[in-house]
Length: 410
Ligand SMILES: Nc1nc2c(ncn2[C@@H]2O[C@H](COP(=O)(O)OP(=O)(O)OP(=O)(O)O)[C@@H](O)[C@H]2O)c(=O)[nH]1
Ligand SMILES: [Mg+2]
Image 1 (cartoon, protein in one colour):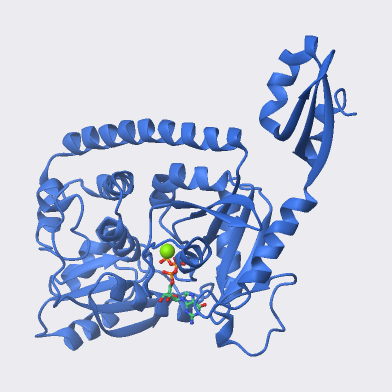
Image 2 (cartoon, helix red, strand yellow; image 1 turned 120 degrees about the vertical axis):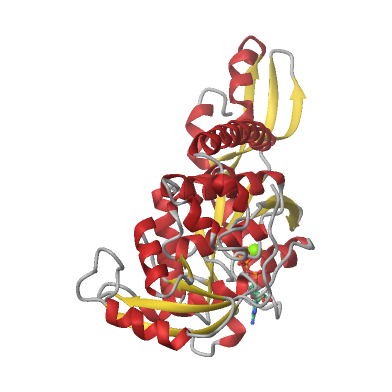
């Protein structure tokens, strides 16, 4: 779909609600990075402690008039409410601020995703997520939304689309869902084939901007886009690489963020799911940042998605920290940028797989070949010998699967 270009002059002012439960400093700093990642300019913030939420406008009218005065006369201003707003709250805040364009955090994140999506599938996923977000908000809001002009929140589905009736959007959503389903079937076939080939797969998973793509590039000599911005890479990229002669497939994945919009996670579920079918995950954190929050957010999101694979915790950007106490036990310190700790990381990966595999020798009587055929996908066959009565195989198998082979082990 057509994308409307960002207005480079777009300036964003943040309204930061402070609720008791929230880590608002981190969320605020992240919002600034999100604005920059949307290629807009951050110009300032009003913080507001919230004791009780005002249903119509979330924050009180006194504060809104204050903000209106502050922004009076400035051009191309967008107000980011760093939280989730209902459609009517968005409209009410906008009119209290003299019809300024108001967006919430989800709209901003969806906008960045719309800009960053590269693959056909990624674009379809983001478009679906945007439509899902807009759809319930569209009742009679056409006029108000079309007032917004270009810039953040209007990319992707686009202005004309917003004005189309809900039935039209519903049809488009059905179409996108169908197309994505077909793509996901195709990907599943690829993943199945990989599993059958029994090349071990490793996924780089973690908070956005922690260095996953840089690490992929370093370990596999790839050239995936890596940059100091949030959600630099959305599409999973897989590359083969070797450690001491053993072959692996390493996959880079979309980064996580605190309170990532639910529709977005849903939309990316199928791409993520194949990455989550890995044999081992490397959970990447920024050792010089809020690594505890990053690790918790990642593990919580993964557990919501039903992920239960083994993982190693990798603390990247370790050249920036001098004190390595207070980090999670057993984490591996690396610096993808400065090439520190990568050999140790490789060793730990190899150790993990060696620990979990066993060398076995199998004797398969010819009349039981069919039964063995069904188990074949679980072993890596190293060599065969055809005897008079049976086939002899030297193989490697995962220790957890050894039980299947008990009738054949010599
Ligand atoms: N100082 C330092 N910076 C690093 C290191 N590794 C990566 N970076 C920088 O961190 C920024 C983010 O790196 P990416 O590889 O794009 O991070 P990512 O996790 O793939 O991020 P998303 O794709 O946005 O989720 C880039 O500016 C990298 O150059 C490191 O070891 N040390
Ligand atoms: Mg990346």
